[in-house]
Amino acid sequence: MSFAEGAARAAGLAGVAFGWCPDAFWAATPAELGALVQVVRGDAPAPCDRATIDTLKERFPDG
Image (cartoon, one colour):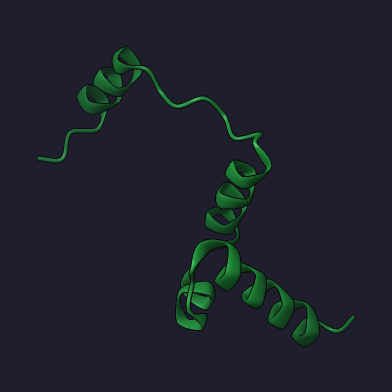
């Protein structure tokens, strides 16, 4: 399979699975696409708890 064929297939699957238009697919990073695939497969990491979120907010304030 060529890159173009693989990309077209992945774009089509992202459209069906996530409702993405072609522009959304091409604007997404591989990490973003991978994160959504993990959720669909059921092996996404557990979300952060409140204490972790509070710690991150302290370390990285938005201003």
